[in-house]
Length: 386
Image (cartoon, rainbow, N blue to C red; front, side):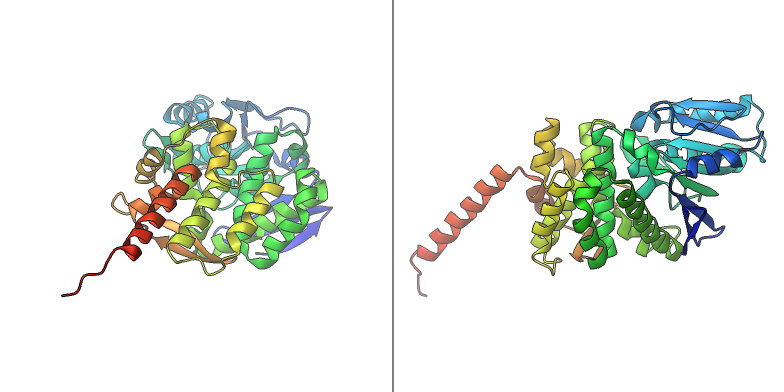
């Protein structure tokens, strides 16, 4: 992975096979527009506001916004549109939209004619810091999130921060949730930088956002280059996601933004790490809660419940986790933090411990008090000799 500046645009090389560049900065979308050929097709999330930069192609396919696009019907519709236009293997699919559009568009490109090139033009902070890099494509099933997909890298990525200014608040916060995950994976320097920049990021300062996107892309590019097919170190990128995907499943796909669910998932992962003896840095949970609050993110599952008005019942979450794509024989595996920058990647946790972590705080308090009462009774009960 290398970073270089060319014509005021930052380019980060993702050193997989074949390698590709992520172009970051104001003007990146204009650069993408100049790359369009007559044989190319644009797949555009219909929820993307017009006006920042237009990609004009002979054929443009509209896609429903958000997670509702990630299903069999949408995938079939895109493939049929490509076939109706008699597109051949010289076609490149320019995907313009958020993470859901990139997931679906990347899968369509991988399947059509057994593979045409995909060019990603992410329009949300979430897509810029996460979905646009690494080649993961997917649709959802009723049984769980991202259960059908392939890993196939794009041929190029163009990330223009001007899109971020027009994002709805919840969608913007969603991107910050994934950035918080990246900082925990990246280590102390990345985490401290995010703490210093939190106020500027919440204010959508353009320079701070460009630097944040670059840091996240560099981290992911480095990890993906080591493990393109997620057989080892790349599993670190799933930090908080076993919980987050279960939250999205139980709430209903699209009911709450992915990165906001990830923020709550990080709090749960830290709590599970502490309770299971994995966590070495006892101060990290409080530090992450403070940073989440500074980034206007939920610092706990209870805060997420309160914000979105959904009970997110612990047993429903636990059932959803059994269908997680990282599960082994229907038993979830968790990525848990030891400290910033160091993770345990495949932790099996006792089901009752997972339920306890997901329980509302009031119920956890009652359980703690009940355990304390039992302990006091045991200490005060008369001992009998033999």
